[in-house]
Image (cartoon, rainbow, N blue to C red; front, side):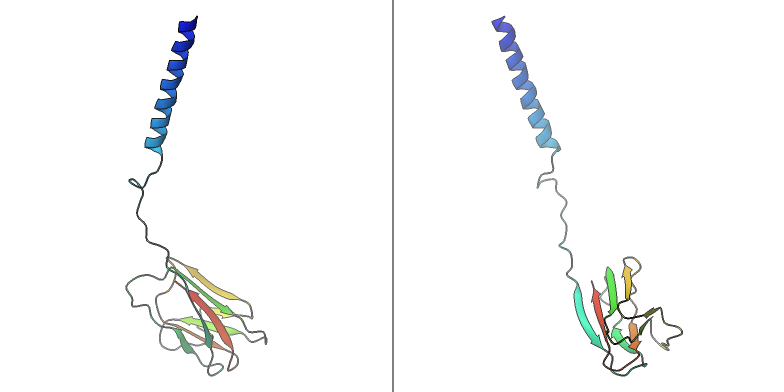
Length: 135
């Protein structure tokens, strides 16, 4: 009877050790970890409209060779003025704009749909502002 207990104890120790070894081999370790680059910090800026109802460049064409990963443009005016966002170069107009922004509205794009073209915008009045964040 004593031999049976010691055999069961030895068997339990062996199974416990084997379980520990298997768990160590299957767990992620620095040796097997995938190397990643830290996420790029977003760039935030406030753009003031120089002349109301006249489009101006608010973000240049992305020529850095890497895609923008996210873009948010917010009409943060509290005076009731709307703004318009146009993606591309050339003849921007309210009618051809990609998005009309009422106060508080956002123009949001995520990769792979973030434009790398120049972005132009205007608002109803001079001194209106747009908040821009991109990465």
